[in-house]
Image (tube, rainbow, N blue to C red):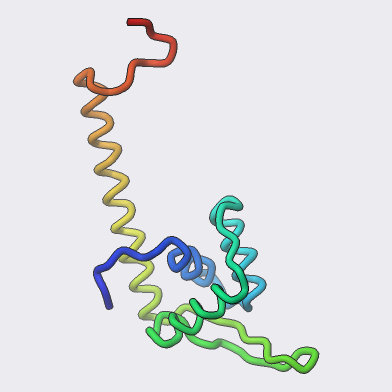
Length: 120
C-alpha cells in the first residue's frame, strides 16, 4: 500500500465500487454521477485503470459472462481496496478540516476577503 495521494479518477472509480459490484458501463455512469458530471471516463482509460487496480489487489473481477459474444465483467472492491479507499477518504477529510479551520482563522483576523458588498 502507498501513502501517495490517489488521483481523482482512481478515487472515483473505487468509490463507484464501494457499495456494490459494477460492470464497465455502470462504473462510468457512477463516476459521472459522483463527480457531478465533471469526470467521464473513456473506455481505454477505464479498462487500463481497472486492470491496474486488479493488479494492485484493490479490486477483483466479481463475475464474468459472455454477452453477444463478448466477455462482460463486473468488478468489486477487495478488502484491501476498502482499506485504501477509507484511508484516502480520511486523508481528504483531514485536509478539508484544516482548510476550513484556517479559513475561519483568516476570517476572524481580518485577513479573509471582504464580505460581499463591502466597500473600502
